[in-house]
Each structure stands twice: as C-alpha cells, then as structure tokens.
Length: 278
Image (cartoon, rainbow, N blue to C red; front, side, top):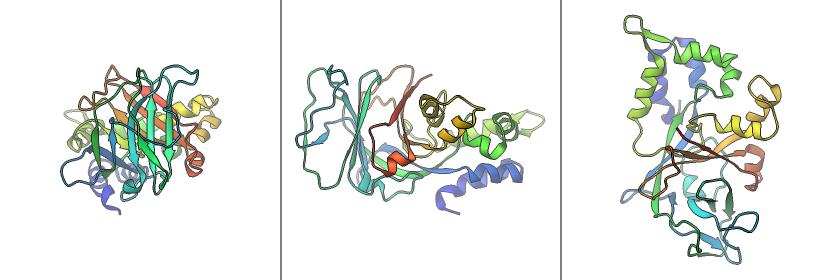
C-alpha cells in the first residue's frame, strides 16, 4: 500500500465493515494539495502575481473582444512531477489559468518547457491578485457522496449512502461514519483547499458530473452520462484565499475539469470550469 493511502485505509478499516471499507479504499485517488510555501519548501506554482506568457502571445481576453481576463494561477508541471497524482500532467512546462472576476469565462494556457516567455504587467481592467507561492504534498482523496464513481462500486448512490456515510458507529449516540469522516478530513487540512487532481471538493456537484452533463448527456441514471463522467478528471481546484485577495463570493471554489484524452493530447482548449459556492 502506498504511503499516502495508509492513514485513510487504517481509519476506514477501523470504522467500517470489512467489505465496505475495502470498496471505499479502492476508490481512493492521490491528489496534490497546495498550500502557502514556507522557507525552504519546493515551490510548485503560485496564486496571483504576473504571468510569464510566450513571446508574441496576447494577454487573454473575452472571446467577444471584451475586457482582459485576470491571471489566477500558475502550475509548474516539472516540479509537480515529483508528487504522485491520479492525472497525467505534462512532465515539464507550465499551466496558466485566467478567468473573468466572476469566472464566467476562462482560459487555460499550456507553455511547453523551453518556450521563450516574458513577464507581462496586468492590463487595465484586469484584476491583479497578490502573489502567493505554493508548496505541495500528495494526500488521499475520496469521492463525495454524490460522485458517479460510487455507482460503479456500490450500484447506486442510495446504497453507498447507507453503507458508508450513514453507517452507524455507536447505537447509543447515533454517531455515523459521516461524522467521523468530517473530523478525519478537518484534522488534516490547513488553509484553503487548493488542489491538483484527485476528487475535487465540489460543494454542489462533482466536476465530472457537471462536465458530463454540459457535454450533452442526461443526468444520473443515464448510461451515456455515466460513461462521459468517467472520461473527466479534476485539473485544478482553487478556493477563496484572502492572502491573494481572491474572493469569489459565498465561499466559492473554482474547479477546472478536463477530459482524459484532451489532457493526454495537451489540449487545454476545452477545459470546463465550474464555480461552486455555499
């Protein structure tokens, strides 16, 4: 068993029936959690600051020729390659994430290693966010209770709900696994939950479900939806972070999803962005 799995696996096996625990452990995905880099830590990216764009590339703007997008995040794929994750990121180069202030439109740019680049000042009408260097660690991620992957393992969301989240740990107090899982999760979290790969922390619907539905399928119960959802993965999750001045409203998170085949082809032109708030 890999190191990033051990603590969660021990927790699940202690709290759940054996068969249920093994099913849940089998669904684990490694995610790269991003946090503010401290002195001496490897910097794998940053929130805010100024982007380094390829020579000759215009600053991204609205598709209709409107105002410029704001620069949000840079990921150093070469440094991220040190960490285990469930998605096939490029082994080198950088990913640049831009969006409007309301995240209504966005653009992801892949800059291959060796490309001539230059730091660009933010144009008028683009929001400039404070720079926050990011460090990384691989952590386990597990599906939220409405994730399509649960259907493949438990047969239905209702069955997964009963077997996992509603499993009673103490008949006298009525304590459930859901309550202990929240404590387990909160105990390992420090700061806003920025993340690469893994299961995103969708506050309403998983990015895989949102993107599959946006691709023209139905919803849960539709075989086409289930198959399309299997093709999508989390690329990046950015939560509100006052240190960078990033406030989306309602405690919202920005979650970018990408199809596996597009990621393999290094095609970031059809990334799906979901904005989810409380």
